[in-house]
Image (cartoon, rainbow, N blue to C red; front, side, top):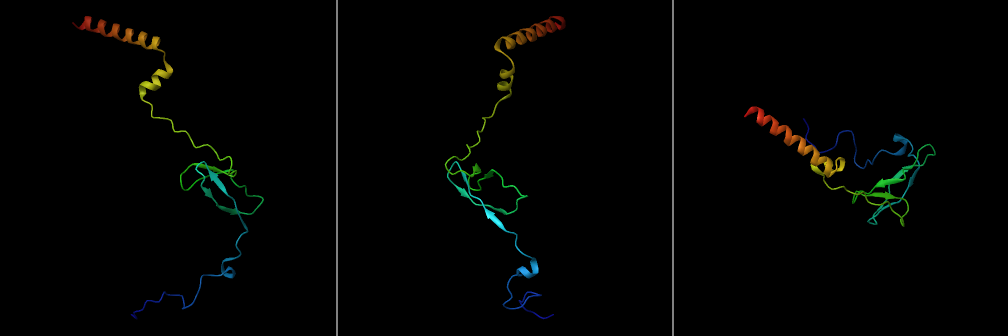
Length: 117
């Protein structure tokens, strides 16, 4: 086996495949998007009337949503704090409902203890 460092199937000075082998590149447009932190993102899209350009784009630097208007970027998303199970229960029940349920549970427990004891 012959040793060598040449890449098989290529020749010295060969460049990348040209358009004649791959076909023509589709026409593109570049759109600027700005996030609330002032970062500009410039993705390119196919310039085709059948293809719609998105109104917002996620900023690759901070992750905030970005819009096309640099003076009025979209607001960053609000992160809701973690809620405990008790917080969710308090949203569904009033303090009076909780007191009534507690009284019923205690009465049932006392009745069961009286029967067992």
